[in-house]
Structures are given as C-alpha cells and as structure tokens.
Length: 287
Figure 1 (cartoon, rainbow, N blue to C red):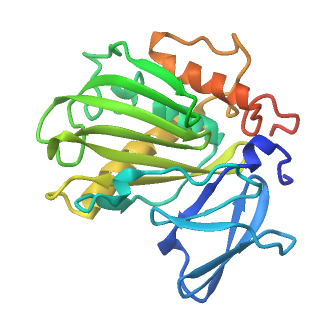
Figure 2 (figure 1 turned 45 degrees about the vertical axis):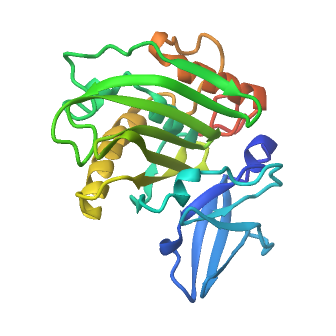
C-alpha cells in the first residue's frame, strides 16, 4: 500500500525502535505509514531515508529512534520521569499487531477489559466495575488525559505481593503515543510509568513498542519484561480478533458505555484533528 497523504498523520513524530535495535555499521529496513525506510547507523549517528533516498528528520529521545514523514509543528513530547535518576528504563521489545494503531492505543486506555482479558492479574471477574473517572482535553498542550482512575488488581505489577487498589492516570500525547502512570508497589507515593509508542506500518498493521520507567529495586529486567509481554500478548489476541480492524469514528458505529469515557474523548479528538489514517473513514481501507 502506498505512503499516506493524510497530513494529520504525517505531521507527527514516530518511534522506529529502541536505539539498541539498530546496530552500528548496518542498514536496516523499516516501514511507517505505508512508506519504506532505510535506517543507517555509524557509531552514535543514525540516518533515516525514505524510498526516494531523501533524508528524514531524526531524533534520539528516551532511548528510542524517532522520525517523521511530515513537518511536525511541535517537538517530541516531554516525559520528565526520564530524568529521574532512580527510575529503571526497560524496553519490552517490538510486537507486531494486525490492527490499526489507533485500536492499539484505544485498547491501552480501556479499564473495562481488565477482569476478562487479564483475569486474576490486572482484574478479577468478581469485581468488574469501573469506578467513575475524569477525562479532559488539555488544550494548552493538546493532549487527552484520564485521571482519578482506580481498579482492584490481584497482581498489579511484577513486584506485587498481593492484591491492591491501583490508581491510574492516562496521558495521550499524540494519536499514536500514550502512557499511563500507575501506583508503584515499591513506592506508594510515586507512579510507575508505562508508555506505548505505536509505529503505524499500514492502516491495519502496527508495531507496538512498550516501554517502562519503573521504581523497582527487587525485580530483574527479565521479570519486568516478562510481566509486560504477558499482558500485551493477551491484548494482542483480542486486538487481532476485533472487527473492524480500523477504528470507527462515525457516531453510532459502536456503542460506548460509561466506562468508555476516555475512548469517546479520544475519538472526538481524532475527528477534530481530521486524522483518517487507521480509521474507517479512509478511502483505501484494506479488505
């Protein structure tokens, strides 16, 4: 499928992978928004070029390689937790998902699926209720936030030793990049950070790059990665069986409940941006 012409999608920054995914003195292929790219690394310098050989803007930020096919009007978002010295940065690998990248982000925002998809880990079927929470579009930074979220979780994190009421905050910084702040079992007065950087390959194909900034002095990297991969692979099964794979934005196409407040605002935000890549409003949707 050809490179998209959707300006709302093009004019954003996207992750192509963790810096460690690109060995020195190598050329590696990548794909973004229907465009074939080549990533070349020489020492610490990394270049990205498109199929015509034109060099693209490149940033190395938060341990990842970022690029854009357009002309973003804003820099890459600020993640202040990256600068806190006691946090452990943990990259959890790249996961290909046969679904729209917007579906992947929306699933990340969904509290209601915890008891049924992540049973006895992030939720339990005996306590499926989603307590009322707040959502808002913060116009000054053009981000979608969900606050005052809470849920009972039998095993909230790799370091958890028992069930707890976990507090959540969600922050959607661009249509394809989202993070959550979650009660830390190791430091109850602070938040663990779990980010999901989504690389939209095609309208119905994405690569998810889960990334964590943890306050955890007991778990090994393997334990942290294993826990997060287990959760995401459970989500992958649901996402790849969800229909349609593209995200509907038309009113009435899917019926939300009270638990879907963040999804409703997220979709409204996408419509206001006139973003169509990965939505049902595309004219070149995949059969």
